[in-house]
Image 1 (tube, rainbow, N blue to C red):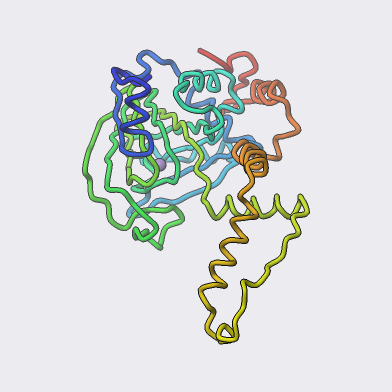
Image 2 (spheres, helix red, strand yellow; image 1 turned 90 degrees about the vertical axis):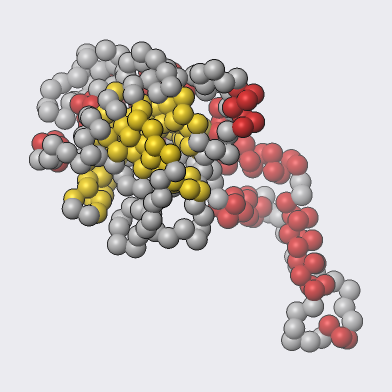
Length: 310
Ligand SMILES: [Mn+2]
């Protein structure tokens, strides 16, 4: 999967640090799902999907579920269909994840699959997660830009998080079997040269603010009932300016609340493995797979038997 690179070297030099192109990472890999089947998934209400179309100077975004007519009226160029969490629905896609043995399995978010027509892309952007972009069918040109931050300017006229400026630092044409690793925050822009299928294997990166929010809910649920107490006061501290001792005290008390290995290990395990789609919790894995197997291609053909590896 990592070419000539050992897992050790990859983790030390690249993971969360810099992009890496791996030629022939998965040579001869055949997609267990066709573009038509992917479009079929996007007809389902339970499946998260998006359609991004480039028109003139901007990208438009539509959320699924889609209808067959949505697909039949698309132009021949410049659009991309993205389907999230395909690993949940297609067991053969889930099996692909077994290749990523060099990373903790609970860090994995999902496998998103995109189908793009020539010219199709979601624009220059950056993400807050690590991603492996596996080119499965067709060719996609990836341009890599600089590292971005909260200050990086985004276009304010777009429903997508499109970068205002994009300075290309590297450019690669990915062929089937090639894979590109991108750490969080690196600007990138992948444009389909031919009709293409790209798998994005993403690793979740919650924000620290989200983590603290969830942790504080956990503390309240557990009935954590410590209250703020003043530091040792002196008359000089009776001022409208807040003395540094109060700040130190507040930090100390917050730290006390979370400085608990049992609390953090239980909460962290739950938080990091929380399902992305709570509404699917009532379905078993078998039910999910069976649900999709019984459905359609977008052109109306039944896929009762044909869904699965080709
Ligand atoms: Mn991206």
